[in-house]
Image 1: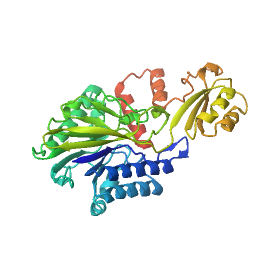
Image 2 (image 1 turned 180 degrees about the vertical axis):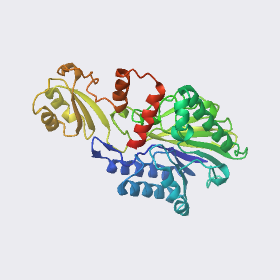
Image 3 (image 1 turned 90 degrees about the vertical axis):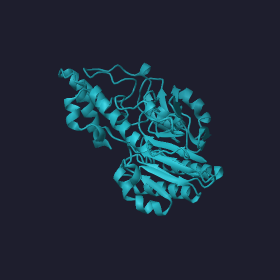
Image 4 (image 1 turned 90 degrees about the horizontal axis):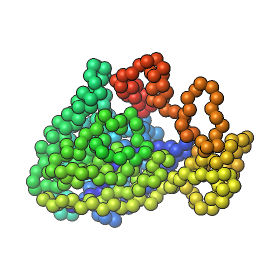
Length: 385
């Protein structure tokens, strides 16, 4: 059988205030075209369909339309909630989606209540078992009282054990005559960040080793880390990565979907299919004169510009005149005026994050407790999402 593995669409994500819905529409249209051309038996969407838990109407319309178009190819469509999605909303639409041949899984479910999705591949008639594990938040896995009472290592162990227990229960339903697949949205030890993930829900303490996935799995389809990568494990474990760079931290990533061929008793074969839709992101450096010479080489790429000359009135407008697609314009630190006063430097032209500011506050007040920093990260993430 054949299936398509994709994740981390982040529909509704803006970049420096610029809507990217048109790009996201083109990317999803390309994914639908691949699914149709390859005649896949299933499409697995491993979480983060949306960029936030309260997507706008246009974002919802785009995601629903893409899922329907994927189902119209004749493929089974299975999508789980990621950390950016609102799990309860996906589950609320579950009965309606089922009528369109789409399986939505928002929250963790027992195997016999949707935690294992079973179907027969239309191309081969082979049975397929897909164990689905939506994002399990640290707040869910480790209660607030435990965060305060236990050490970070103890809390990380609790999270690890919960995920292990859930996966063990779900994969116990795997059968020898079927293609057995795990789909999950989480951080695996040793995985490389893509550059645009939400830090408070990807911190290193909350991860699981790839050994939690059983050898009986023909393929593990992961979402959450935006970089395309595979990890050593008893079975094939793959992040397909995001199909569109969500910010400049991901400008060098390779955007693909994974086309997987699997059969009972045969190792899965994986082929990357490039995604070409969407505007590229690029960082350029130089004086205004040097940037003017680059103007004809950047096409319609969105740009982050480091200006290599001292700041002056009207400098930003000069840059925008020659590079109208510049979404971020900053002075190269080498040419920045020295910072006066007692405020610590904020790094190479980058505003400091709330986490960095809170860490400074704790240091100034003699607070040295990793649990406080962890609680702050959870609180900030909950409010910002």
